[in-house]
Length: 119
Image 1 (cartoon, rainbow, N blue to C red):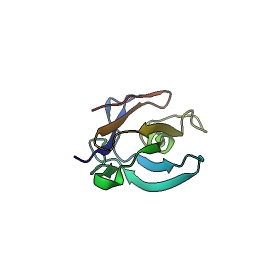
Image 2: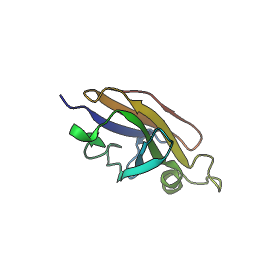
Image 3: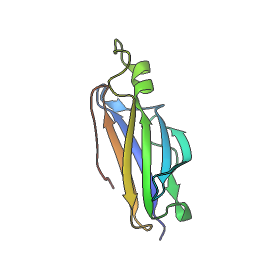
Image 4: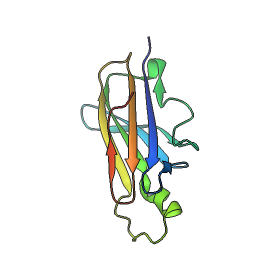
């Protein structure tokens, strides 16, 4: 059984999925060097159209998702400060089991965010 990596972004300021939010997925080598694996946009449901990593692409190691919250909120919320309080939101996490489903949701507003390992 192959594992996968998925994400979901909710706009808690407006109470809706964050459609059109850019996300970059990076792998992080033990040396700390980062390699960009892909960039995607969330769909109308705040999800990506397919898993970020699936099948053999999901490997044991460290990864980082970088959510472009500042650009998203600049388009959806009026009267934000410049520069924004939150701009790029990085979340680093480890993959230990390549047969598991790793779901990394982001709940965000222009002023705060939270995440957890979902299912």
